[in-house]
Length: 345
Image (cartoon, rainbow, N blue to C red; front, side, top):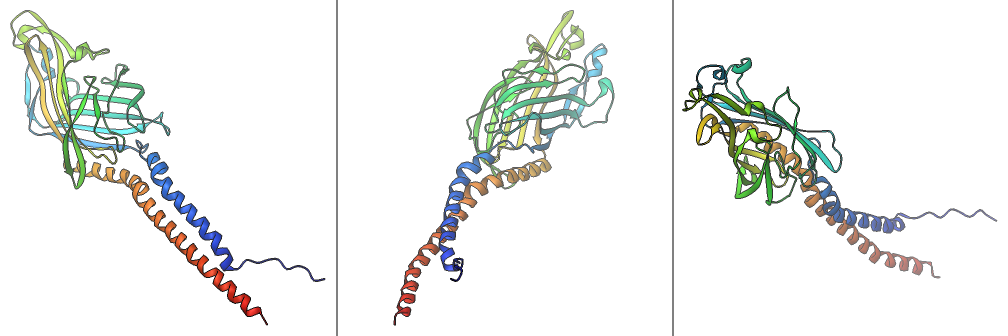
C-alpha cells in the first residue's frame, strides 16, 4: 500500500486565513494607535534638553552692588540684560514621573568681573519632579540661589514653570520659583510663532517680600544708614521685593513653551520708600524661538502620527484586506464548481 502523501495547501487556500489575519491585525492597530499608543506618547519627554536666551527690550540701569560698601548707593549705567536658561530631565525619572532641572542666570551684557563687580544679577538651580502625563508637580521640589548655601525646599508647589504636558488644554496654573507664588495662567488667545500655531497665556506675579520666604537669601535684607539709601533716618532695614509677569506662547501639541516675555521688577523697600535694583522686560531672541519651535514639532510628530496617520493608514489597509477577502470568497465557489463539472464522464 503506497504511503499517504502529505496534504499541501494551495496559494488560494492560504489566501483566506492570511487576509483574515491581516484584516484583524490592521483593525486592531487602527483602534489601538489613538487609544493606547498616542496617550503613551503624550507625556513629558525624558529626552528634554532645552536652551533659551532672552534679552531685555531696552538697556536697563542696575544697582551697583559694590556701592554696598560705600557711603551711598549708586546705579550702574544702562546695559542690556541677558537671561539664559537650560532645562533638562534628570533622575529620578521613569514612565510615570520626570525630574526637571532648570539652571537660570540673569546678567548684564558687560565684561566679567569678580566679587561685587560680577555682571550676574541672579542665578538659580530649580528642581521639580512632575507627573509625565500632566506636568503637575509631585514629590520633591527645591531651589538653590547660592552655591554656598543648601537648596530651599518648595513643599507646596502647584503649577507649571518650564513646560506643560502635551494636549493639557488652557486651564493651567503657573509657579514662579523665585517668589514661590502659584497663580492662574490666563489665556490671551491664539498666535503664531515661526509658523507654529500656539496659545498665548499670561501669569501675573504679585509683589513678594523675598526676605520673608523660608530659607531666604541673606542678601535679600540689608541694614544701612538712611543716607546710604538717600532716605531720612539713622539705620534703615530694607527687604528685597519682586513682582512681574510671564507671557508664554505654548504649543498645545507638545506642551513646550516656544516664546516668552518676562517682566520683572526687583527693589529694596522700607515702608513706602524704594530703591530699585533693576526693572526689565525680557523676550526670547529669534534663535531661541526657532530652536524651540523645531523641538516642539519634533516632539509632537510621533503623537500626531499615532493619533491621525497610523489609524487612517491601518484602517484603509484593513478595509482593503476585507475587500480582498470578500472578492476571493466570491470567486472560490465558482472555481470549485468548474472543477467538479470537469471530472464528470
